[in-house]
Image (cartoon, rainbow, N blue to C red; front, side, top):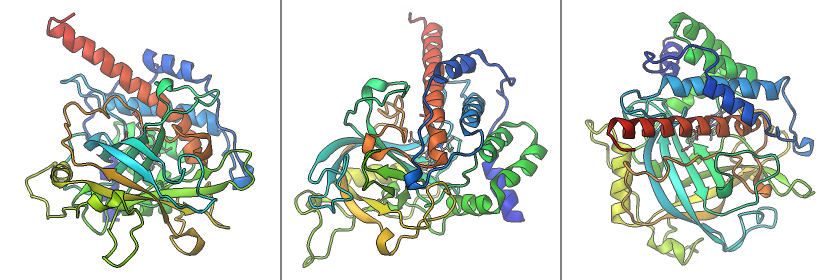
Length: 410
Ligand code: HEM
C-alpha cells in the first residue's frame, strides 16, 4: 500500500499555481477543430487490430486534456511550454543509423534496406513531467530516434511539419506500457490535472488497475540505476507493422535499442567496418550532487569517442496481442530480439541551450508505409501527438514574441 501511495505521488504532478480554468481555452478549440479533419487510422484485422468503443472520440478528449497538462506545466517566468511527457532532455545528438548488410527477407523492408545508412537525430529524456527534475529520482528514461529521410505524407495525415516527414522510433527503458484502454487513459490524465488530491488518490489507482500499477511501478523503480543514457535498454512498448498494407507477408514487430558490445577478438564482427571505432561506454557512479548526471555521463562518453548502440527488432508470434500493450512479448525463441542496425553516435559536443530537438516533434506516426504503428495506444497517439506538439509550438511562439516585446525587440 505504501508503494502504491508513493507511485501515485510520483504520478501526481508538480506545481499547480498556473492551472487554467477548464474548459474552453480558445487556442485548444482552434487546434482541435483543425485536427478533427484528420483521418483516424484504419485497423489491420489480419495483424489482430480491433477498435475500442468510442476510441476516436476519446482520442480527441485525451488530446484536449493533455493540452491542459501543457498549460499546467507552463513555465510562466521564462514563458516556455514543454512536452507533456519526457520534457527533460538529457541530450539531443547527431547520429548515424547503419542497417546491417545481411537481413532475413521478412525484416529487409522499408528503412531496413540492407547496407543503407541514414543520418539521424536522437533525443534522450526523462519521463517525469518536471523538466528540471533530479536525475537521481526514480524515473523512466526515453530515447527518440529520428531518421532524417523523407516520405510522401500519407493522405489525411495532418502534422505540424509535414514537409519534414521522417522515420521516428520512440522508446522507453521498459518493455510494457501502463495501460491500453482509452477511457482509462482519459481518467488518468484528468486525475493528474485535477487540483483535488483526494480525486488523484482515488482515481489514479482505479484508472491504472492492478496490472497498470505493477507496470508503472516497474517502469519507474527499476532494479538497476541508469548511470548513462547509453547504457540501458529501450523498448517501443507497443507494436508496429513491418511491410506495406497489401503485403501478404507483413508482420507485427516491436523494437528496442541497447548498448552495442563489440565481439571478443576471434568472433565475427556484425558491423565490421563501421563498428570498430565504438568506444567502451563510461559507467562511473554518478556524483550525488549532480542533478543532471545523465547529461554529464553522455557528454563525457561523447568527448572520448564514438558511442554505439544496436537497434533490434522482435517479431510477434501466435498469441502475442497487438492490442494489449500491458503484456510483454517475451524475448525468446522466434520472438527473440535480432539486431538490424548499428546506431553510431559520433564523438561530438552537444548543447542543451540551443538543442536542435526543442523545435522538433518525435511521433510514432512519422513513419514510412512499411512501419505504420499498430494497436489502440498507437492509434490514440496519431491524434494526440500532432495536436499537443502544435500547441507547444504555438505557446512557445507566443512566449518568444512576449519576451522580444519585453526586451524591446520587434
Ligand atoms: C496513449 C498513449 C500516449 C500518449 C497520449 C502519449 C503522449 C505523448 C505526448 C503528447 C508527447 C509529447 C509530444 C510533443 O510535444 O512533441 C509524448 C512524448 C513522448 N512519448 Fe508518449 N504518449 C503515449 C504513449 C507512449 C508510449 C507507449 C511510449 C513508449 C515508447 C511513449 C514514449 C514517449 C517518449 C519517449 C516521448 C518523448 C519524445 C521526445 O523525445 O520528443 N509514449 N507522448
